[in-house]
Image (cartoon, rainbow, N blue to C red; front, side, top):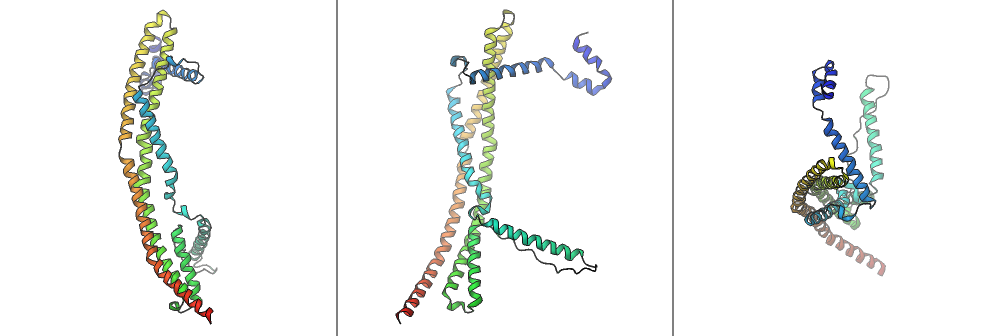
Length: 323
């Protein structure tokens, strides 16, 4: 009875599942993989330390190296643009003072929630129950929204002491300005939503899937190349009794490298020929164009009105100074 058969027999008392699992193990293959992995690691370390002559490192096809450089550039382009355009996922990117507003809004919301909790849970007790309150409505934290709110609040302050807005040019100008920025704020929300959906999501998807798949295929090529060169080193120092086995290992490693290189080339070409990045960039540009067009239209629509009010106010001011 062989050693492996004896080992199996000694575990028969553990049940059929354990015996089945043991039968599936191939210790020789596992040991071979560990040995190859160690040899590849040694090869990589020797190359990194400059202990391997250039002619002992397997040269990959020039087409492969050219594609590598192009894929690296494509990946860098995706990362560089994402680094900036990711701000569109957070609406407060142009309004840093929103932090103070958010804290005040959070405090008010917590206060309202506590009041409502007390109002609901103190009913039927001897303690006075406060009247329920309504939490403050959500406010967009963008610069266009803030400008519209600020102009509206400024107009309200004037309205409180100037009940006849038709005679107050500043009040009318503020109302026009606020109305323009309300329109721009709506366009801003639409722009950000369009960019998130039509640019950020697919652009990130391309980076995470097809580009990363190509990168992983290249890593597999490098691992296979190291394994081949390590096998060649083993063949050079193999004893006559082990020459044939070492030679077969080199041939197998060469076949593996060829296969993995072909796969990597195919994946890299697919990534580089993919039209999606250009389509995504077009969607980004289109969303920005629509927003800036809406902003220009809204501001040009009120600028003339505000200018007329400014000219009239200045003329009246000069008249009062002439007398």
